[in-house]
Image 1 (spheres, rainbow, N blue to C red):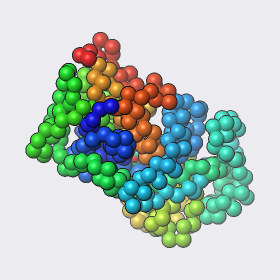
Image 2: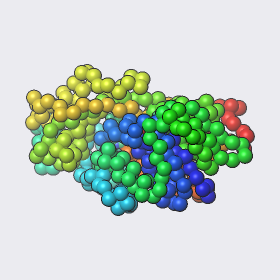
Image 3: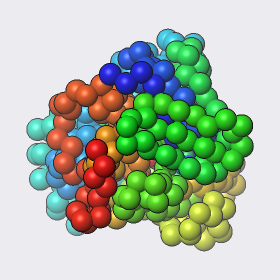
Image 4: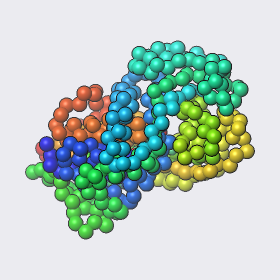
Amino acid sequence: MPQSVIVLGGGIIGLSCAFEAARRGMRVTLIEPAALGGQASGAAAGMLAPYSENTEQPDSFFQLCLHSLRHFPEWIAAVEELSGLSAEWVRSGSINVFMHEADLLPIQSRLRWQNEWGADAQLIDAAQLRMLEPRLAQSAVAGIFTPHESHVYAPKLVTALEAACLKLGVTILLQAGEVDEVAVHPSGGVTVRAKALEQPVHADRVVVSAGAWSGAYERWFGLSIPVHPIRGQICSFEHPGGEVRHMVFSSQAYWVGKRNNRLVCGASEDVAGFQTHVTERGIGRLIRSSNKLFPFLEGKETAHRWAGLRPATRDGQPLLGKVEGMPAVIMAAGHYRNGILLSPVTAFIVADLLEGKPSELPLQSFDPNRFTPIPYRRRFV
Ligand SMILES: Cc1cc2nc3c(=O)[nH]c(=O)nc-3n(C[C@H](O)[C@H](O)[C@H](O)COP(=O)(O)OP(=O)(O)OC[C@H]3O[C@@H](n4cnc5c(N)ncnc54)[C@H](O)[C@@H]3O)c2cc1C
């Protein structure tokens, strides 16, 4: 087992990996160029929704998501107990709402395979829909109720993970500035230099969890890392009565009622480079969808508007695993729309790799070397 690990990036993925590695007895240093949770992880709606997010088939990505959901109870309990802070985990269940009879055609096959994978989901008619969600528009014709989906308040999970990491003795280096160099030594060990750090940091291993910025590490690992940012614009409304009880998904948007009396509505998916501002067009679409599905929101101003950059990959699958020829380097990036959901399972996989344990999950689809042509892969180990 390595004695020491550097984690690069302080979003939910880096913090979760740091937490798990420290729980297993490793000495961990987390390097964050700016602030913890300051990017995608602080912007997320916090939904833990493997069934609603994967409607086609039980592929390896769905299985990864489901595995993570199933570990959330023990994960949250451990983080909250160590940190003494709540991540506001709400087991709300979810409802996928359909507005047209034609939308119901592919539903039976979805229900069949999802229920084989433990969804306990049911098709509900318009009357049942309104019993579960009285504020829904009359025009909604049916829905799928999925009881086991839930949500957390993502910024609070970040804060709780930070506190839990500190309790476990993780060294967190904030405002470290740009990473200037990652030197992976053929004889073993890694050295990281960052602009605002006075000293280089050395460790046995390094975990790259830099979200949408992970591609910056291509030059040091001879690895093709096609991670790119997809902006998500998102907003919230005042929601004092908690009128929306479940997570609600339509074909246009989703809604999540938070404990802080806000109803969050997300999210756009736009290509805007590394820009994180919101646009009238992006938020306007969410407002129109909100008015259509929840007429009580008609005329209400948004309380807050924000955006974050999802780390997307070329094939939609995360990069999880060791860099070929450089076993000291582990990639944990590209979680796109599901990084909050996938945070526990990612942390377990990374910690297992650090300990040299085989994973109980099929990881071939997530191999971080899959984009690098074989002749170009590094071979010095
Ligand atoms: C609007 C929106 C809604 C979302 N809703 C959900 C949801 O409901 N459920 C869900 O599961 N997921 C959701 N997601 C996706 C989720 O937020 C991401 O998948 C997840 O936050 C990715 O975490 P991360 O730690 O990889 O990246 P980030 O949170 O972006 O963290 C990356 C960190 O790396 C740092 N960094 C930058 N450059 C470097 C460098 N060179 N070296 C080291 N570090 C660097 C950054 O400063 C940042 O702190 C949503 C995303 C958005 C934008």
